Length: 212
Ligand SMILES: *[C@@H]1O[C@H](CO)[C@@H](O)[C@H](O)[C@H]1NC(C)=O
Ligand SMILES: *[C@@H]1O[C@H](CO)[C@@H](O)[C@H](O)[C@H]1NC(C)=O
Image (cartoon, rainbow, N blue to C red; front, top):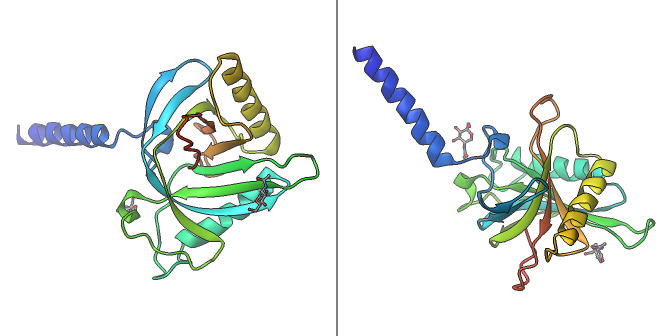
């Protein structure tokens, strides 16, 4: 009798904590930024992210995949202790990269790679010691988001997916910010199934909010 009661109580506690977190499945056990979904269709959903805090680093380069790797390394070093206080900071999801393409094939693009700062560290965030890594607060912002599975973080895939989303938005008559998009990858390389990737395009709000 007593055992049954404890089991029910435990199950109830699990339900409560799951409900409180309201985390999408693809964040798994990691902190990830909170958002609400407005409209959605089979091609994309409209997400409004709450204001948040990120650690970021900017890479000027030709290739997305190489730049992502370089940016990831810098940010991973930052959370592994390259900060004032030499503290460890938990990994979060996603790894979000802002892609600003140069005008021609021989122009460099800017890739700004970002880690979301864990909720527990947002008030008092350890300062990076690498000057190439910077902390910044982002205001609430709305994005058009398309989603896909698999290993989808190479140059060709992200270009195809970003172009496809921009085409859908144009066809649907949506107002969006042109010339830049974000990629979001949620998985470590060793996760073989249930992988999740996204493309975010900034919704033109009229208020000029374009940062994330
Ligand atoms: C990339 O960043 C540099 C330095 O901030 C800037 O001068 C350049 O115009 C940017 N390029 C693109 C394609 O956004
Ligand atoms: C880091 O993650 C661990 C394990 O999920 C958790 O117990 C701990 O509270 C987290 N610490 C911070 C500062 O977020």
